[in-house]
Amino acid sequence: MKPAFAEISQIAYEGATSKNALAFKHYNPEEVVEGKTMKEHLRFAVVYWHTFRGTGSDPFGAGTMQRPWDDGSASVKNAQQRARVAFEFIRKLGAPYYCWHDRDVAPEGKSLKETNQKFDAVVKVLKAEQQRTGIKLLWGTTNAFSHPRFVHGASTSCNADVFAFAACQVKKAMEATLELGGEGYTFWGGREGYMTLLNTDMKREQEHLAKFLHLAVDYKKAIGFKGQFYIEPKPKEPTKHQYDSDAAACLNFLREYDLLPHFKLNIETNHATLAGHTMQHELETAGAAGALGSIDANTGDELLGWDTDQFPTNIYLTTYTMLSVLKYGGFKTGGVNFDAKVRRESFEPIDLFYAHIGGMDAFARGLKIAAAIRKDGRLAEFVKERYASWDGGIGAKIESGKVGFKELEAYMLKKGEAEPSTSGRQEYLENLINEFI
Ligand code: XLS
Ligand code: NI
Ligand code: NI
Image 1 (cartoon, helix red, strand yellow):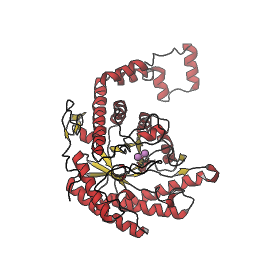
Image 2: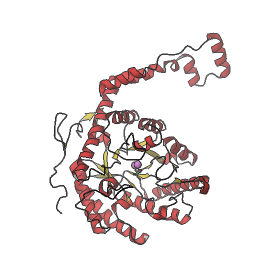
Image 3: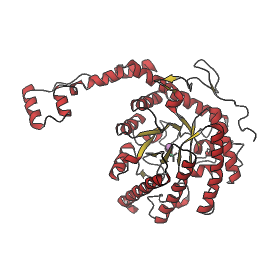
């Protein structure tokens, strides 16, 4: 096969002074930060859907992307050829992982049986390419939202046959993930929500979603898949309300239906902002519950209220993200997955390189900055000091359950007043962060 990116060689680390746009300035895979290499910390993944299937179409216009290796057909041959190009790209970029939806890698056939056969034919090529390049599958997932059959959702559809169809798809995609040695499997409830409550039995739909996930957990055990299951929160789009609306809603749902031990969260930046949260808020919510699994690294546009899935280049964003990730012990099975797409106007193949290099460098800087802030210790010390009243005296007694309202009344009657504690020092802390950026 003729290389698709013949003019591009392996992207190398050249250091911060390099002017080469096709080199890393900060991502030095073997550099050690807090006892692990950058490669081990960040576990970068390239997504198949945006990077190899994104056309650049939007509600106002057709696709713009120039992808000379792709003949535009829905043939298996084209899908296999595309898979080889994908691995050429990922290898030259130096990302250790990739992720897919079943329908990204292979076309849909006329029947479920035919669809599964086409999928198998492409999975074969993916497996061979993984072996040839050493690139691994971070997670697989199912697209149970694009096809018209999913108009009312998949597991939350009003039509039980659609639930059954989605189950077949997840079963098959989980088998493929296992076959490819995938380290996880993600559930993003594409259309699991409602457009209007007038036609929706919300309780029943949520019970069906829980039933679906339990069946997936059972099947995972049955086939011996040891990878991590993730739920990816998103508040809206395409529906008006998605049941997995944010990290807190997901955690509550998982707890209510006894699913929490089986899932972690895959937190996406642009979904956090659509939910009215910062990425950091979502990471802290997941982390505090012991459920921070992986991240979909992208960013929205401040002025566009849509999941624009842009590549992350904001150093504050990557710094705050890595501060939370390091705080909760780093990625185990998850990683930094670029669920991001080049702009419609960035239609040349080389833009895929610029986009990923920029995202990887931004995260490498975020990692180094976060590690420096942690090493410095002033930020953590400030937070610790702020809660000092809980480390002894009445605070320690409350935390350890030694006092009730009666004792607290006696304590305060004697003391007389609760003096305001020290300043929150937000500006001082923001300046402190800027010292490291
Ligand atoms: C869509 C989601 C999707 C998931 C995988 O907004 O981010 O891309 O990551 O289904
Ligand atoms: Ni995503
Ligand atoms: Ni998204």
